[in-house]
Length: 295
Image (tube, rainbow, N blue to C red; front, side):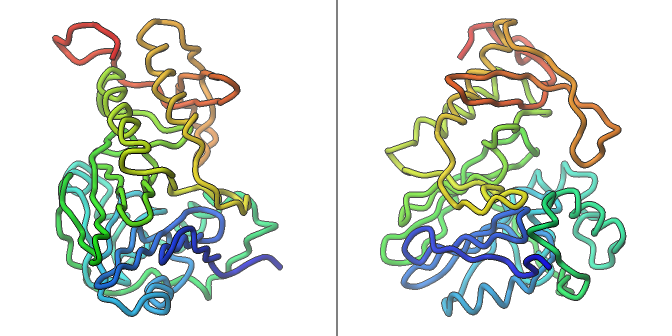
């Protein structure tokens, strides 16, 4: 019998990582006056109860992006904050977040996400996706969540993995909470490789100035129980693989999609100083009319 409850780790002062059964990370940040919750997982726990046991402050809930393993428990909360394009440019948003859902599909999808069922063995009894008619409030890059005592959390726009993906930089813990926008296999299906490089360079430029560590939405993925910061070499390698793609030097491969193994995806593959990255193939090299100079 494996674990059936999330693991909770304090990764900085009053800053908790909640790992939901090996699939995804959610975060709770507490300031002197308010708290902030980042992402709402899949639905294999009473996440709201966890939040309110850890912090007694009033809190806001923000969503990095509207994928089922990050927004699955939004209906446990009265209100969420999300970037407008995650809703308006996502034809599956209503399906993913509806109050009535297909239990068989939910379990099938999450079984594939979790991967290591020797470590995690949730039962249907722990499923709790909530039943609140949640209010959705749109936010944009630069909006500030003021937690008091000088602790401020700011969202920044980095589309690619999804159309309105936001990452959050916390001035208190000096951590960047990046959802899925800088994982080793993240890329863009939305804009040209040249544009994606510039977005990645923007977050890279903030390293040591505004943050010292990165925690992603999946740092404890599939039974791996470490809760270390992501290696910045992955971000550097993601920039370089897209540069190599522009130069015509990157290896193009076809690999099975992990959620649907019968479906093949094209990826660009590169190993830089021992760091392997494999993001999806961008839809174009350059934006239309753009001067073809590699950023």
